[in-house]
Amino acid sequence: MILFILLIDSSLGYSQPNGSIVGWGVQVVVQDEDLKDIVTIAAGLSHSLGLKGDGSIVAWGKNNYGQCDLPSPNSDFIAVAAGWDFSLGLKGDGSIVAWGRNDYSQCNVPEPNSDFIAVAAGGRYGLGLKSDGTIVGWGRTSCVPFPNSDFVAIAAGLIHSLGLKSDGSVVAWGNNEYGQCGVPSPNSDFVAIAAGEYHSLGLKSDGTVVAWGWNGYGQCDVPEPNSDFIAVAAGLYHSIGLRSDGTIVAWGRDLEGQCDIPSPNSDFIMVAAGGSHSLGLKSDGSIVCLLYTSDAADEGLGVDLG
Picture (cartoon, one colour):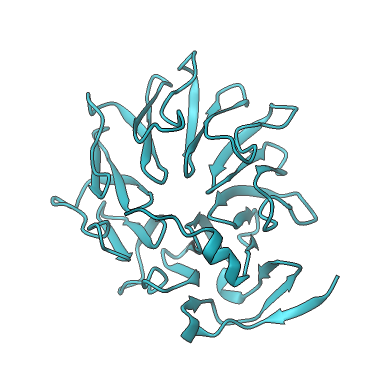
């Protein structure tokens, strides 16, 4: 095992917080003062976002479309979401700020830009959940389900979407080529949802995870024991589950190390899954980031959206 310091040149289209990146193999761990006091995390195709306790956002990773160029004023944010090449931030006043790639108007939040309580970012589209339980969509896949009411959570995949209803059922819409919209029966008792490229995850109130859709890398094969989960995240071809004891379980594609949980695997309170990287938020507000850095990853993960 060779230990090395990796410094990313911003001219190559990458961004990072001020500080060094220590890596081994094809993984790197971001370590920096800016990555403390984090309360929420999000992972896109090749970039990541962290929301700090003071309402500001930190961003790092690939920045070829400005997805890491934080908007001004960088304050008063309460939630973040990372899409393929763009980012969303939800403000305390209920408005959404979007930045990054905008070829399908995925950064053009429709009016009235107000009264939002949650955001989700997909391949080339965004979703916003309103306080009245309705969903607003914009960008390439901007359709919304009918009846558009009574939603409590949203998730955005490559070109399919999930909505969680207050009765614990899941509504799925969009591309269903691999059955990623075919919610398994019984469609009830769900408490959380996540959407990857062509697969979907649902967390049940009993702590079990249900997975459906494309399973080419085993991303739908939830490992045993399938119990005691409190959160889920879906990446491009991999899945992550957080257990109540603070440990992380990951399954699916692991060619870039995105499923190799670092030691100590403990004290995690939140997880996020991107293209070929994963994020784990610790209870002390620090982040552990597994990130593939090879140029080959960009070629292998390039998804043609037309």
